[in-house]
Image (cartoon, rainbow, N blue to C red; front, top):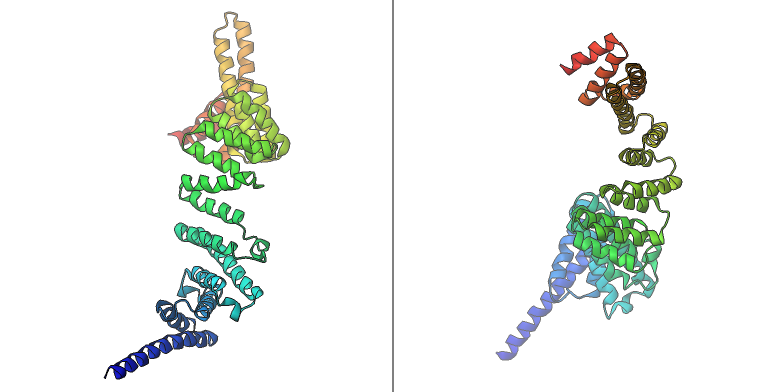
Length: 384
């Protein structure tokens, strides 16, 4: 009786193993027929069973099935993480002790490359869709494949540890995980990665955390490597503008303008710096340059108009304090002429935004002073 029982047990075990191997074969056949959903069902049964979970053929077919699900739009809905499952299985193939029995080195490396590129592209897609953690999971998996890429094909496909770190940083930056984000950027800085933005992004994170001194340190570190990079100059410029050091800001703005002379924003910032330093003529000139580059630049037009308007107002106050009425009258006329230089700039602002209350208040005053009764009434009615 004992012999019969043992024999019965062996038959049962053999039948179970055969059933699982049949699942592998059924998965392959389903895949060949284009029935990817059915192939996934069969291959997952085989992957979950201990008798075939580490079978090299099972992992190879599983990788092929999920690669098809990833790369073929018709089947993409079957599994959003198909690229990851493909990579896991083809990584298992590459590491399997029996892999060389079935595949040569080129075949194995091709699988590693296809999986790595699939992970990278899907990571970009998931990040764009707002699936941040899933994107990071895929990016992290790439490092397991890079170590298996004996031919360097991933690198030739622009899938490198550097590109993965940089893409991973952007994911963490979006979710404001600055601890992890700084870690990714520091890895790039440590290997002297040739991308100036890593320094400006590092500075940006420290600035948002309120650590301005550390932010400036990274900006300066970046400028040691990329002295004339406009992004880094602007990053340093923003630091000095934020701290109210307009003299240093002026120096950096002039340097940035040399590198990017058609940037209207730089001229606007230069005008603001001169304005804060009380250098009227230089501020006017800078704002005019900004408008010359971008004729509908509302902020520059508005600041230019307000500059003339305020200058004229200050001159009128000076005239009111003069004891000699002749000099006072002459100074008032000059003041009004200066103030009215604001009119063409403010009128363009009005064309761009006719409901801005500040624009309407200034126009009302200017139309009153130049005697344009019709437009004065029109603007005044809009203020009521």
